[in-house]
Length: 341
Image (cartoon, rainbow, N blue to C red; front, side):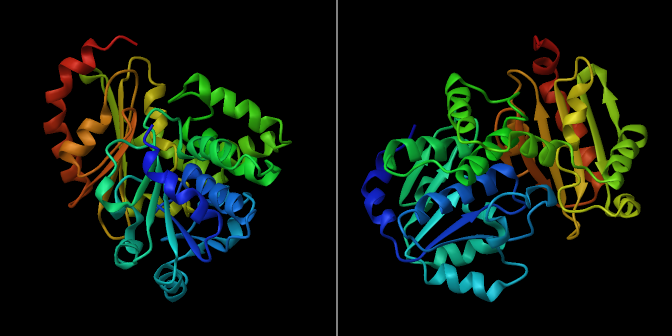
């Protein structure tokens, strides 16, 4: 774990006058859970803090304590710019490269405030931050926030609201404790459970609150779009804006769809090609075992992430993105075929 650089900032953080917490665009449960966790932690010291993000939260995260206070740049750009420009500290959560905060990046870079990173993704851009609290072996950034709190904020009692945010982030990034696990992950989760958190509500909101339209969209994908390449132990599918329109999707309705590919017996690599409103192609990669899908994402699709969960993008049509992927895939055939599950 990289922690030494943050030590000089611990006490100044506790007395900060105006602090901004920034997370990545298209925020997920870990991004919002860890950000709200930092917010609730520092507010116990009287710190005035705000969480800002480029775009809307997925509907299934609206239950989180203080989620209604997250400030959305696309809804109020002037306020977000003013908060960042006047910040005494900027805390960045759940991303390793500043460009992951999207439209907020130029304002964050222009600010003279020290930037502190909390993250668990590989290869953080250390030059962009004055302090880093980083551990790639952690299940989630929320797990890191829990460790941070127990190491440096022992005089602050754990509240149900704080524990709910942290537990939600851990549940989200581990797929309900299926991925990226270590013994410490379960120890932290056990401690959070002692804080009377609404476990059933958390699980229901994240995994069991899909709209009827989302279920129909899933059925459409599985019936009409899923492609299986047994010779590569790979499955993939794509969705265009036109294909999604009949299902009236909400933000977050495609979250987790790619995981269906890994439900096929023997499949090691799953990929989802998704056309976004700006016509760029966002690509989600998932893999099993030792196969590093982030290698494909970083080398060929201007992306990165974890070994078994990563993302990238492609400037072109969905058809061109898939064609390019199919040209790249043979380079990984030996790894995919030889992997023992």
